[in-house]
Length: 445
Image (cartoon, rainbow, N blue to C red; front, side, top):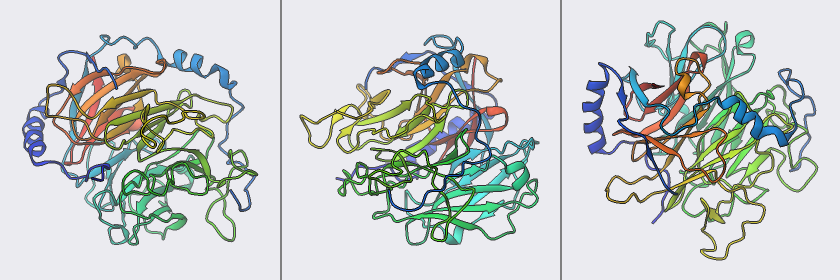
């Protein structure tokens, strides 16, 4: 049996439950009645020019944990707050991501798996015409589609943004589009292909992209699919699959649509120059903590365990450089191949793992949906908490950003939703998306 991230189609019983719950949520938030702890579970030329957005040199890597603790604030107690969800908007077609440009417009962009991106204005109006419609270019398998979006750090002046999707051949495509002017709500210019990555199977596409504080674009790729990573691609330094990649989109060469940062770990060494870190199975949502540069990855497991990986801030502004997160040697903290006696040498253990099987219930977990460390202002009690969920069970947990590994997350809500993603709106406020079409504000009191 091949176990992978499930089809982004909700189970029937969850749809029925979600309809009922959405009706009640329209009138107000749903809150957890209690906080329950969950117990565990290279090659081509290099573009040496760095993006113009690179900030001044950061602190030494040894101080990352202190940075985390300072940024986390005081919201670290399991009983310090109650998490709540308040219905924001509904009626979307398989929404898989929400993000906002840092341009003062107050807009939210909602990525739909089928190939459209919708705009929600600052006034809360969902525009009828998509800002981008590439439906005819997108493959429509269960784990395929339009999967990720990121705004250029200079979007307010250049109007550039990037999308990650599976093309009609089933391969990953990273494409640049531009809004002209940036304040407009409809792409009228042709896109520019930045990168294409061949995919051997239809599943495990990863799909997330994000710019780091260093101005480079980070790309999450799955291991290529099937089950058990038959090609051992996640561990291979000659493959771009099962990785976090890091590229410079502010330039190109005669043979590719991007440059490679000279500080990437395998430049001048054995390994693809684009690789930032490896050993991932299907990273469904990663994020970079805006306060510390820590890299957080929700990596979907095989048969037994889901994991959250966290690395510290380092001298490159974003954690995770040359890290190996273990797959397919490890699933979570456990041996996968070989099943026993595996070597953990050189592997970065997950901060959190949780099991699929949940005792005394038929509502098992199956696929982690990575989230964000909250850095907004609307919910002070949530500041410094990493929020994540499970696609199948609808459970939502939090863990303090400075938690010591291995950490035990706090179960905050047990919902009826298929949680497709979390996302950040204006002012870094947190949202949760369901594959059934609804978007909720996440808060704490």
